[in-house]
View 1 (spheres, rainbow, N blue to C red):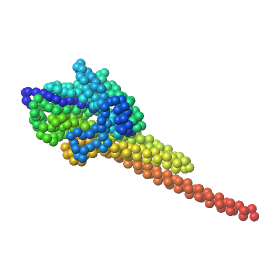
View 2: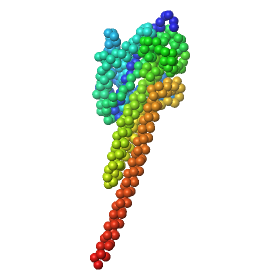
View 3: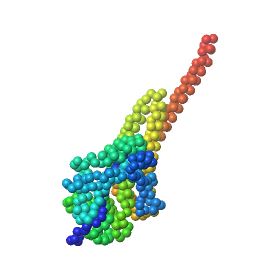
Length: 375
């Protein structure tokens, strides 16, 4: 590294927190209600990517909130706030602290200060306060609103310019990204350093994106925000997949108990219980399948190779695909159970019908024999 420390001319630290708040959000109704308060909102789109190359399945609704003041080790720093609403029931809130003319070490320290401030101390309730500012006025637009304990957070260091023009290769030589990406002050092992820097991408010679599980560094002299938007969508998908994974984890044992209870029922009631349970499982499968398809289609990638690589790496790094596969496996178990219940219910109804026919035949025989016996 050079003895002269680089200066971040322009950039920002962006802290994201994502919440699952409802089964779905009626974005049209939410937009109308937000506008009724004379507050600005817009439908998000990727600013630097042609729609035919990559686009949102259903563009989220972006709403502006009032700035907040963060206490960073005794220094009052103002942060801009924006929330985004996704049709599959997620809300993301982004705090953006602008950076100007700050040494690289100061930039790394500022990012770590923001993380500490939001994770401990009197500002821990800030996220809940901001979420309430969005959720309360838009409550009628939330379809089957329900508070979930599942949240996701992500921290991004974004640099638009240094005090000198740099290529991505020169940047990697001049600064050590590991303290920013890890939050660690102690030296890491070579293996840990390699893992942290493994997911890095460049399209032009002077841009760079490095991803980790909970942090990212973005160097983009052109000021485009598409990478940040893509990372937010990937986090929103992880949030929803985790929610449905836990929902199905809770549902499977309950399903097994209900099936056992239905099978213990008397034959006359069993077919009805099987039918009711099968309808309940079918409804659950239909709802989860519909929502997971919306989540899967949140961002549609066709032609933008660079963003597609970043997006694919984020999905793998955040384990979105593995959690989605787990959801699919649990849905398959429920579908198989539904089919078995449907077949067993049909078999019980057939048995009941056979019994009724046998009883009717016996009654007819008895009625035919009685006059003969009287003679």
